[in-house]
Length: 369
Image 1: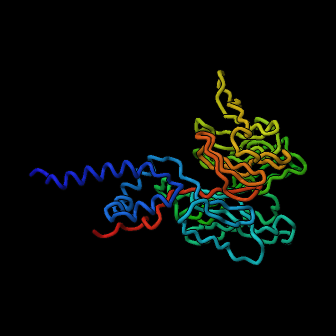
Image 2 (image 1 turned 90 degrees about the vertical axis):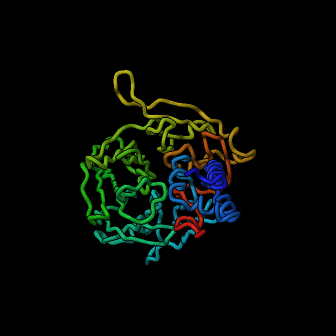
Image 3 (image 1 turned 120 degrees about the vertical axis):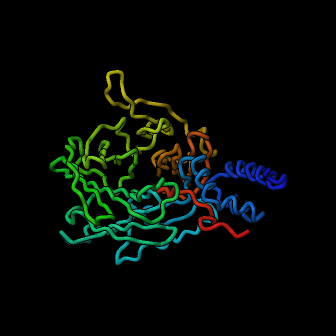
C-alpha cells in the first residue's frame, strides 16, 4: 500500500530538517538547545541515536567544550554544559596532567616539591567532569619524582565521540637524567595492573629537563611526549623509542598535522607560528618537513601581541584538529584551518582541552510523541 501523502511529506520534511541540524556547530550547545525546544518532532530527531551517530560522523573530530588549567580548575567554553567541575577532594593540592576521551588525569601537586617522603606512595586520579566520577590509579613507581602521563579510553567498541565511563589506560613515562634513559609503564583499568615498557636511550636529555606533566598526542596506537625530543610510547608493542624534534625552541608543542600525522608547532621568530609535519623521505626515512609559517599579528585581534614576546606562548593543542591555544594578555582559541579566533580565558601557560560531542538533555531517550 502506498504511503499516505501526509506521512511522506513529513518524512521528507524530517530529512530536510536533519540536513539543517547537521550544520549546527557542535561547540555551540545553545543552538542545539534552542532547536530542541521549538517542536517535539525536532527534539525527537535530535535525540535519535541514529541522528547523533551521523552528526558525529559529519563533524569528525569532537569539539572543545571546556578547558582544564594546571591547578585542575575547569571552565566550560560553551553554554549548557552540565559539568561538575568539583576537583577530587584530597589532602593536598592537585595538578592536571592530561585530558582525553572525556577524562582528566590528575596528580598530587606537592609531589613535585618533595613533600612526599622517599618511597611514599601516591595516586593518580582519573576524573570525569560531566559526572564527577573519580577513580584512583596507584603510581607504578613511588620513587619517581618527575614524570609525564596520558589517559585514553579503552572501552570496547567506543568511537571516542562521547566517551563516558568504561575502561581506560594510562601511559606513564619518566627520564633518569643521570643514566640518560627514559622508562615507561602502561596501566589497564580492566586488570588494574601496570605493564612495564621497554626503555629508550635518551642521549640529549638536559640536566634540568622540565619533563613533568608534558602534554601528549595520541596517534593511532601510539602516544607521543615532547621531552627533550619526541618520546613515542607504542601501546601495541609496549615499547618506547626516541626521535628528534624539528626545533629546540622553548615552548614547542606536538600536535596533529594537517595530513593527520604527527605535527609540531613552535613560536620560532617573534610572533611567527611555525608548523612542521613528520613525513617519509624519498629513501623511506622519516623526517620533519616545514609546512608553513603563520604571522600571528594577522590572525589575533588587534593589540593582542602588544606585550613582551616572552609572554606569548602556545598554551594548548586540541588533539586531532588544527585548533591551538595562544596565550598573551588573554588566551585565544585559534582554528588554523578556518582562521576563526575567539577569546576563551585569562592568560594560561598550560591548558588541557576537554573534547567530546554532547547534546544537552538529549543523550537519553527521545520524548514520547
